[in-house]
Each structure stands twice: as structure tokens, then as C-alpha cells.
Image 1 (tube, protein in one colour):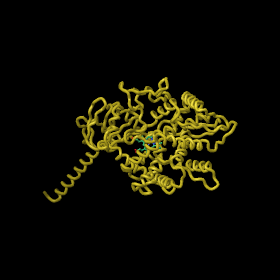
Image 2: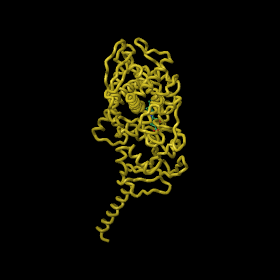
Image 3: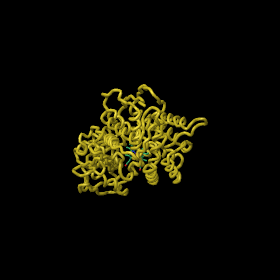
Image 4: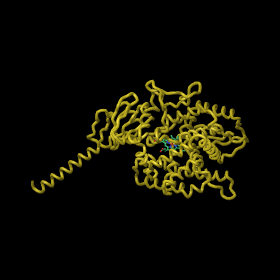
Length: 513
Ligand code: HEM
């Protein structure tokens, strides 16, 4: 063979192997093996179903569930995602050992993309242990009391008191509720500014609340970029803006600044201390504190929006909740009239079945996290009905209880309709739910599950209850346009936790007493 012929052959061979390698990487040759879930690669190599999945994950997964049943593998942007839709099998998956199904690998990449540091297993352990200590039981009761006082500061700030009819004020339901929650929870968890000389504690608290209100606007901007940040794909302008916002919050939450505050919660202080003890740098500690700020605010604010907007849109629900709150105030001998002190409730000592059901129904309809596990070794998965499937090392396993559970018409008839008493039996006890005739262990899963289950869930529910109790007790409220529909969820935020509305909706409020 002549020299040039040999060169040409070598070039052709390497081109051929590059093409083959590319096609292999694009998943063209992957075939379903015996016992593996149905495989759906879509029509476009590598991208697979990426576009439909990104456009509307709920619609896409409902379609796949209809086509393939309760377990299937789809190709999305070069990744093979195994979805398990059978809620009776969720328990087995979330309890599986970390050697087989790992939560940390994916979580650590997301945290790095969004918050700029890579958490390790020991960081995760600190979060879970300290949260268990301070966000439950007696410590939670103490935290709730602080939150209640801060909510009162924020909600009544600038509204005055006394007799006489007050003018209506107007705001977006999302803006009003998310902002109030952000301000009060920030002060509760991260503390308040110490009083300047001559200022009272109250004045200094009002000042912190106003400052938190300003920070809220930037926090909301950051929140909007979250879906893009998670996948790590950003245009240059968005990248620049997210950098600015991150730097801003790292500064607000710098170790130097947070330790100047009074009354930082034990939940924050002890986590920070333990992180410092295991050698986290000051920069990383600020990054971690920003992560805590987002985790404690990013889902709760939008969740209280949905609770509040459902109440405003459903007068029968608002009436039932108001009656329940009135009953509690009567039972606890509290008067709501001009001149009397603002109400106080210890959530641990009262029963609120109607409000509980309202909140659960809201979480069912509006919280839709993906539960992500990396498959660490080839393994078998036994479904609750005994079917066995093989899963491949390197693929991902995902649960999406929103489609698999929360809007399943067999479990929740008329699933898209808000029914405030859906979780209540006529005698006031909690309802149970069934699929295929079998009782469901987890009727809804807004908090995720297993080792990464949200440790702030009890505090989150308390925050929502306190907000509703104060609002229905002291305010007249109505939507500006009673005919306006509740905004749909913004598809780009789907799967992250609480969904965001596509736009805000205006309401009027005025203090009654
Ligand atoms: C309605 C409000 C909330 C919702 C829907 C929510 C939901 C979630 C979800 C789905 C996860 C991930 C679970 C998983 O992947 O398995 C999570 C994690 C977490 N949440 Fe929440 N959360 C809320 C409020 C809160 C609050 C108020 C706090 C703290 C005060 C908090 C602290 C955390 C922390 C620290 C994690 C990380 C846990 C870990 O990595 O082990 N959350 N939350």
C-alpha cells in the first residue's frame, strides 16, 4: 500500500471510530436488556426527549406513564432516567442503601451550581442532625413563638391600630405573602440588628424588617434564575446577574455580619459552629448560610401564596378556616377587639383539622419535587407487587410523586380541583387514601423522603398556619377581580419543590381591628 493510501485509511478509520463513539455516546446503540424497564429514547440521538421534558415535565411524564405503565426509562440530554411511578414502591426506593442509590452525588452538583460550594457527606450529616434537634419538639415550640412575634411585626408594620375604618390597600398575593414570610423567617432564623443608641428594641426590629423587605426583592430575582442555575446552562447576561446576586447575599450573610446580629436561632448558629469546627473556610460558611436561607425560604414563600390564593378564591374554605380560628380564640380566652393585645397561639396546644387539611390539599396540588437518586451499581428493583426489574449502574432513578401520587385520579378523584376538606373525615379525623385497594403510606410527598427528607417540614407548616391565623383574624381581604382565575404553575420551576405561579394576582386588604 502506498504511503498516502495508508494515511487515508488511518484517517477514515479514526473518523469511523469517532462517529461510532459519538453514536454510542448519543445512545443510538443502547438496547433494552431482559428484565430492564421499557426504554424510550425518543427520535433525536443524545437529546432524546429533552425538549418535551423541559417544556412541560408534568405533561410529558403523564404521557409516558400512560404509554409504558408505572416504570420506564427515558433518554433526556444524554442521561438515562428511570422513573418509578408506583407509589407503593416509593418506600423501598427511599430506604435503599446509599451504596446502591445515592442522594449526595446529584445534590452536591446542584448545590455547587447554585451556591458555589460542594457539600460533603459530613456537611449533610450536620444539617440533618442539627435540624432534628432544633426544628422539632420543645425547640420548635420556642422557634414558633419567635416567628409569631416577628410575623406580627412584619404584618402590622406601618398599619397603625385603633378605631375607625381603615382604607383598603392593594398588593399582589404572591408579593405580599412571600415577602411577609421572608421578612419574618429571616429575622427568626438569622436574627435582628441590635438597637442603635437611643432606639427601642421595637424600632430596631422594624428597621430589620424593612431591610429584609429590600433583600426580599433581590432574593426573588435570584429565585427566578434557579432552574437555569441547577442545570448549569446560562447566557452571559444571566450569569453576570446571578454572580452579582450571589455576591450580594454572601456579603449579607458573611460570618462577620451575621455575628453582629442579636437572637440568631440555634438552628443557624449550631450548624455554622459545627461547619467551622470541621474546617470550613469563612467564605464557604457564608455560601452555606446562603444555602440555608434559600432552603428555609425558597419553598415556604410560594407555598403560603398557594394556601392564601386558594382561600381567597374559595369563600367556603375561607369561612371554614375562619370559624376554626374563631373557635380556637374563644377556647383560649382571647378577645379580638380594639385595644386588646394581639392574639397569641401555641400551635402545639391547639387542634386545627380544617387548616391542616387546607394546607395538605395545597401541598398536594402545588408542591412537586423530583426525588433524585444516582444508581451506583447494577441492581435489581422489586416493585411492591413483586415484579422485578434490573437497573444499570450510571443511570439515574427518579420519583415524581406529583404525577405518580398527588394528581392520580384513582387516589384523588377530580384531582385538579382544590377541596379544602379533602383530607378530613366528617368526624374531623384524618382521611386515609388507597391505590389498588391498598392503603398508601405516604398520601402526599411534598417533603421528599428518606435520608434527605426536608428537616424543616414542621416549621414550614407552623409558619403557614401562623400567617393564616393572623390574616383571617385581623384583615378583610378579597381578590381585586373575583372572576380572575388562579394563575397556572410556571413549568420552568416544576420539579424543584413548591411550584411558582406564572404571574401574580392582585388582592385588597384592610385591617379590621
Ligand atoms: C413548604 C415549604 C417547604 C417545602 C415544600 C420543602 C421541601 C423540601 C424538599 C423536597 C427537600 C429535598 C428532599 C429530598 O430531596 O428528598 C428539602 C430539603 C431541605 N429543606 Fe425543605 N422544604 C420546605 C421548607 C423548609 C424550611 C422552612 C426549612 C428550614 C427551616 C427547610 C430546610 C431544608 C433543608 C436544610 C433541606 C436539605 C436537607 C438535606 O439535604 O438533608 N425546608 N425541602
